[in-house]
Image 1 (cartoon, rainbow, N blue to C red):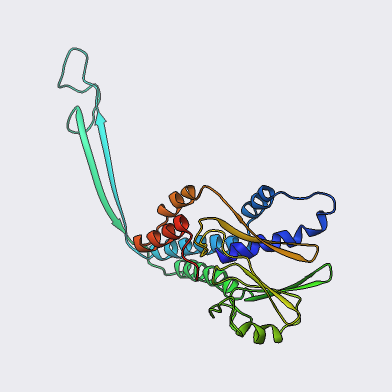
Image 2 (tube, helix red, strand yellow; image 1 turned 120 degrees about the vertical axis):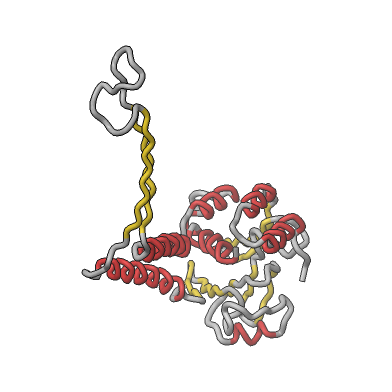
Length: 263
């Protein structure tokens, strides 16, 4: 959810040069953000596909069992019920069932080669995700942005409250005008030195006490926190269909309905 949140914010930045000609509505921004496939989404799909390839290649080493069933009807001579019109097997109506088991010996190394190739493709997908940057820097119209999930010193995991003094130390290491963060799902804007720190909140797992999608808009040097009411019950239906443990589904849907709890 946080990765989607940043994709949404970066999308607004990317469209900033167009604002002087066409102002995008919120619905336009949401449509563009949800319709665009990120490199992460593509990599995850490729990783899932290569995982299936590994399973298929490994299965080729196993014995292959087959069960064949057939039904034969030999027409009788005209005027009779038990004489065949041609020479066949043992009766007018016959059921045939055949069960076979076969296993290929990998003398040539073909099966091992296919398995190794499938594993290499899966590893390549894993490496792409692992090597994605945990921090991102960009500049738009002279404003320098620094993006990370948590805090610059620990971009993935450290939990830092909105009013924490730690932010002063964090921005002291940066050469940025705006620091964009997430992780806590608590929207806030504050100044620390010459840097503006912005947490847009969460689109789908808010911690504001309201079940609204939270986001932020940067325009002409100003940042504004916003929220958007949407039919979250549709999202809950999709969450209920995910192949994840029931406890996790219950936790996700609870936050969707209640907006979590501030702090």
